[in-house]
Length: 168
Image: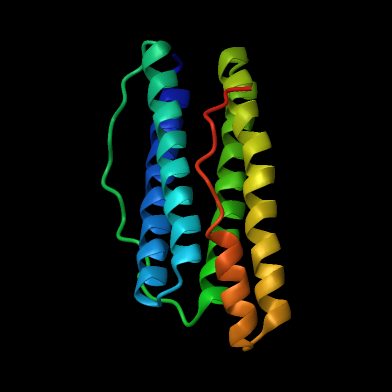
């Protein structure tokens, strides 16, 4: 495995694990607000981000690279409301998308076709991640300060179930 790609993949592994930490923090924020549906949605998101990190670990190891775990920054723990938390989620997903794009550019620069193919799954996944967060932000903006609307969205988000692992 090219050493520059290996280092960049290790950095991104850290970003995925930080994402998991951030969503776990959001989950706990919603638990403290008695919004169990949003808590559920964020906890499942944290699990999904951890699984993304594991995909990077597996890929680095399969390519005979060396996984180097790094310190994970402390995530934010307080938000003004659900809208701010989900806006942060959307903004974070956009940041991760830009990081994935840079990894694709790096893999292309080094003609690492295996890395490029591996990253394509993440490119597609980020489209879904951004759309899911944006849809919730849009709904939260629509309801404004209406408690009944917040409870309805919370109930809807309680229905989220863990996704099946897919490498397609």
